[in-house]
View 1 (cartoon, rainbow, N blue to C red):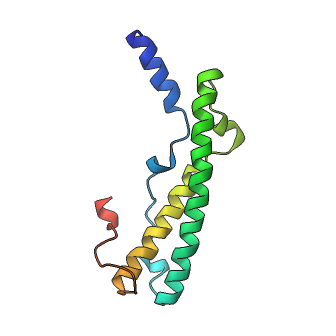
View 2 (spheres, helix red, strand yellow):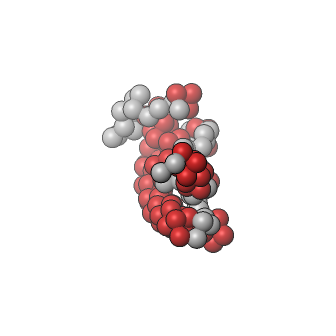
Length: 122
C-alpha cells in the first residue's frame, strides 16, 4: 500500500464513532452528590453502572457500524442515524466517577480512599 492510501484510510476511519473505551469521562462536580447518604450513593452508583453499560453497548455497535460502513460506503452511518452516543456516554461516565469519589470521601462501605482518580489527574 502506498503512503497516500494509508493516510486516506486513516482519515476515513477517524470519522467513525469512537469505541466506548476511547470515550473520556466528562467532569461532573462532586457537589451534586455530596449531600447524599452512602445508601443513596450506592443506589446512584448501581444506576450509573447500568446506564454506562447500556450506552457502552450502543456505542460499541455504532463504532462497528461505522467501521464497516466506511469500508463499504465511505460514509459514517452513525452520524446519519444518530446512533453515536459518545457525548451522553462521556457525561454518564463522569457522573459515575463523581459518585465514586463522594463514596470514597465519605468512606462508604466497599470503597477505598484514593481509588477513584481526581478530576485533575484525568
